[in-house]
Image (cartoon, rainbow, N blue to C red):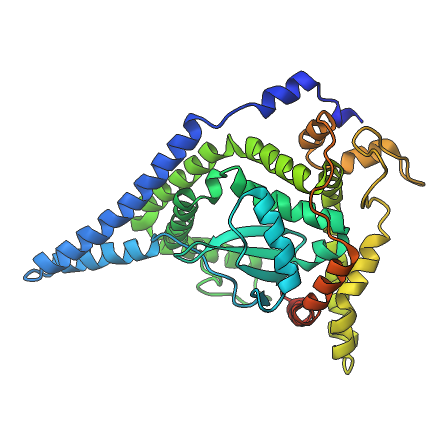
Length: 396
């Protein structure tokens, strides 16, 4: 497989690249963003209080306070539209997550939300920075028990590796810059100022020209310079934190391999290519249920994720638990050429690195009784999620 031919020397060079001055510079830039926000707030309050006898100073102060509120640090919160599980709702699931978190040496997860994405995401929410895991049911149903443990362990491994982007300082700075970019974004009018009859000569050109003229006239040139500053700062912060992202991914892979086995982490990387196929099937089932499922809502919601799982298990490129030694061989599949399979493999550098490391056994396994108990706990919130996916399938 040509894309995976990476020498051990090249792999070690990338592996032992440490995060140095870019991460420090990113933390410094994030601190400046927060200091600037605090300066806007304090300056605005001083202008309002001390300049109350004038008219201009309080107005400027109110504007500065409004800007400070818009670019305030975002601490995040659980999505209100997703089914949410606490410890009492799913004790078996949280028992598995606690064991993985303890093995990864990170804080235990406090909230679990189910989503319709092919992903597992961990974020810190609220001022207390509570760990919240977004568990995508398409991924959970597609992956085998070993792969599920590996996927969760890899996501927790990002925090074990001290990912700068997910830290409180830099993460809240990204949220503040996103709010500032939204405030300073130049809005284009959705409709032109006037339209002409479709029977008129050059009607389409006239309508487009009127829309462009109106867009130029309505641009807020006062916010152009602040918007340029906000977007430039966001790009710089992204570039500074990007340099250590591969190193963090390698460390997260090590955590997942140590907890769920090297073979399980390898199969997780390979089966990430199934995201599009599984996502298309989720949308197809939702549209079918929305169109032809009148009067069968209960049975459709109950069987929705089982049908997704059945489709995923029948996909020809699915690795699953794989062969006995998938790190050094790539089995031929009927009807598929080897170069086509290689083209579908994501993250070749990470796969190559795993192939050059010693295979580690699993320290945490998801056995059949525990998997069945977790499936029972997820059945009711899974039906709620299926109802949401079917309801929103037209707009998503």
